[in-house]
Length: 323
Image 1 (cartoon, rainbow, N blue to C red):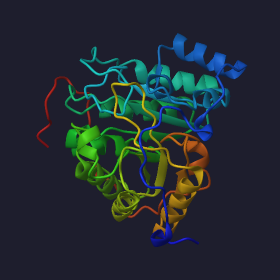
Image 2 (image 1 turned 90 degrees about the horizontal axis):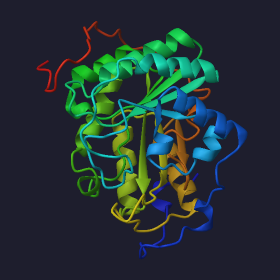
Image 3 (image 1 turned 45 degrees about the vertical axis):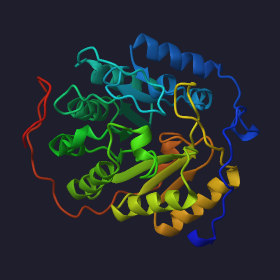
Image 4 (image 1 turned 120 degrees about the horizontal axis):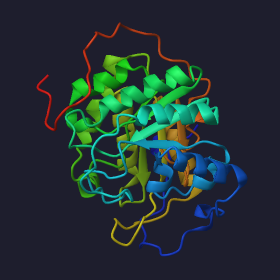
């Protein structure tokens, strides 16, 4: 197996206007794709597949899988890589968890991924709705495994506990990029806060699988990518995704270069050597791409300790909980 010291990558090149052949995908439009689109519209549910312009939407929807995006379609942050609309969100939909769970049941899903926009206008960052979604899916489709891809809740760790107490099978929080590039593309986030979230989630619920993902092509060096992978392992992260950054529009951060498929393969080898239980690394890999396959066959960690019971109620006003 190749060691991390043997990984060689291309030198950074000028931004390219045309996508290389390995990043081109067929236009979506199969029968399952159309059915899933109709079902999501009728349930008034958002997906990150649509909002983030995911290149895998055709494949995933044809497989009857989708990543639900809760808490509306307007984000309170404006990350330089993300296509989701930023601005002032419109209220809080307390009926959304039930609609989502009914849709999961209708689709007969055995694996469900739930993510959200950032909601810095809420005291808990939306954690209550995450917890409600997990509980409702358990109620309507008990055999369905649930993965949540959560924001950092602005460091409100009492809110994070509310999500872990709802018992998702996988708790995902994306680091997104390396430490040096992080402030440039995630101005309202903090690299160390993202690492702390994963560490605290592991401490709160040692048996829940933790996961993170990152993009490459934003000007980072390969050594920085490997250092970030090591940082994630140091906080006990179990699962990793690595994919190519694609620029959503001219106003977003430019692509510095495109990594080749064999370079993603090399990063996968490095990650497995580091001790990640699973690594999905490829040009079109996204944090929830084939998430069911990545988590398949992975048993939860032996439970190290019981979670303490912490009351967790719906937020009523903006601000930070003092706990």
